[in-house]
Amino acid sequence: MMWNFLKSPLVRISFGLVMLTVSMLLVTEFLGLVPDTRFAEIRSRRIIAESLAVQFSNEITDERAHAIEEIL
Image (tube, rainbow, N blue to C red; front, side, top):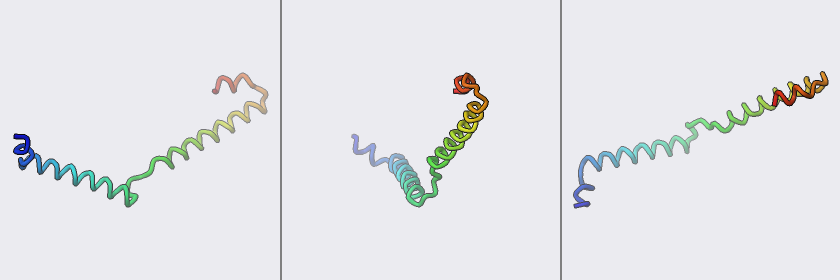
């Protein structure tokens, strides 16, 4: 009975569509068509760290240490 269900055209078409989708995703990943978000994340973290460094250095030169604690 189980094998009859697997021979159904609906199951075969669904399985074929799933395999087509998976293979398309793998090919686009292999070719580099999917954007890599790691670089954008690292760049945004670097920008935030640089802006915090500028802000902290400004507070230190003004000798306002309590403001640094508030910023953090």
